[in-house]
Length: 240
Ligand code: SF4
Ligand code: SF4
Image (cartoon, rainbow, N blue to C red):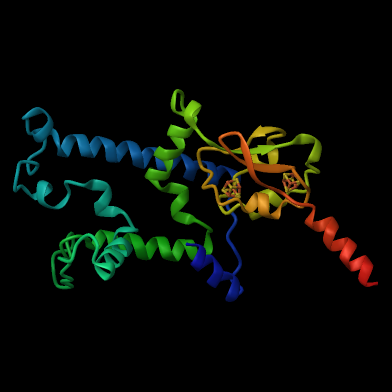
């Protein structure tokens, strides 16, 4: 997705910025997708779990059992990329057989047509909207949820800490955030990592005021924002 954003910049295509409302709705959509997938997993595995077949086709050898027993993997847009890498490297599987004339739901052993369609849709979306898939990814939602819900959040080791006294409210952090997270700008102090944060650290890299933002691991500061704007101005002044 970052590569697609890079191409967008090179091609001078304008980035689509989402409204707060749309962005929030997308962030909530990942929980809807997550819940749907969990329900489907439970229904599809009902025979294995309880010995009762809730839906026809979920029995061993049935249609759903054969093709949709892993609902998320069936739609995941990253699956085709993983399969290509796995097969090229040859570490995990070498059995992938690409069959373009195969059924809609299954192209080969490991990817489905739905995977390929998802990948195409996500790639087109990611060309215009930065990190389009990350905004709705149910796995990202799950990880984010674990990092914010007790007791898991007490075990969270990473933090992005904001210091109110150092922040000038210039708004750069929000503008460069690929996930368009508003808390990094709006929250005055403390840990600004939300469940949607992908930890890219662009906000820290681009914040022009020293120590306004700090990345901490287990309480230790690993990196912090720098006075790059003031340094640049000084350099310019020296040149004059
Ligand atoms: S970029 Fe830094 S100084 Fe500017 S609003 Fe964000 S945290 Fe504050
Ligand atoms: S690390 Fe900063 S820029 Fe990256 S997603 Fe999180 S808040 Fe946004």
